[in-house]
Image (cartoon, rainbow, N blue to C red; front, side):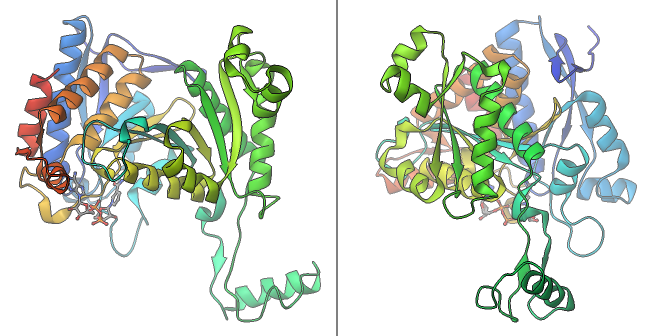
Length: 416
Ligand code: NAD
């Protein structure tokens, strides 16, 4: 059966049963974790669909491998191929030092306009610092293209900083005490269009995936017109016709159902939308761990909360991720290239394997995605893991069985 490409109809994916999916091996430990991921995905797809569905993998070049073969870190053909195939998966890429592209990951996100960074955080049985890690089941949606990350800033004392400071003081009435001469200055844009497309996508995803709550995380009490407007736009999106009768705000829930979501569900509502101030949220992830579900944030807050949430269940080793735009999506390991471990077949391939499971889920191949998650869960329940997992279990007085990177992939397949 010859494989076909995924197509986009509007921003809806059309996924053929025999599909061609591009992958980028990645630098450093990419050489170890990518083959492990491919093996697990192939086994899951074959077990779930017995030949009724399959993936033909297409390797694309990026990073050091691309530089060696083509002279470029991110060849135009790679970008074009991802655009053509709509969905891809990648290992970690080294950020080239000096000259050219600042970061290949950032470049990929910008070129393909992958405006939401999505990080599911769940516990699979790894060593974790909190008492009840089984309560963690978050999906964090971090905006990728707005906020202080766009890098409009000038160093203290530079002519640009001085010019901007003078303008703000002289023309905009900002007092000198707030903006002294020796300040570095940066700009934090929060744009309506960028915020709304991100929030809309997150709410759609939450509804399609049967989630119960979505929380807008913000610092709108202080940054009223950036973070505060992010929240306001969030509620405006929730009031759009496509969400009518499906998404209910906390305020409406209080007024109409005395805060009882079960009663609202009887009237057809599916998702509760609320908002929380960022600092409080960090505290509550620890004190009210099970209360959060889908978290929707601007860029900087999303960055912080993604890693903090992953930390609750033992760190980035088993944290998947994806960058998603209008249909286009690139799934990736959340850790870097860990160069000192490269080629030694010893690191944990779990982050990339779970990213692949998330990708299968995104394609609607939910049975294969579940098989991978279940295989991983059972492998960890048998206390089989790579060195990092075994090391963390040891801290809890648990003796694990250490396996290699490829050995871990094999164990997951055997435990499916
Ligand atoms: P890193 O994630 O590569 O390593 C940090 C630590 O985590 C290391 O001690 C490493 O031993 C450990 N580690 C990482 N992945 C592991 C795994 N799968 N199993 C077990 N242990 C693991 O971060 P770094 O050292 O800061 O960055 C190295 C390179 O990776 C840099 O060039 C950086 O730019 C790049 N990077 C790329 C991405 C990406 O492609 N998405 C993300 C982060 C960093």
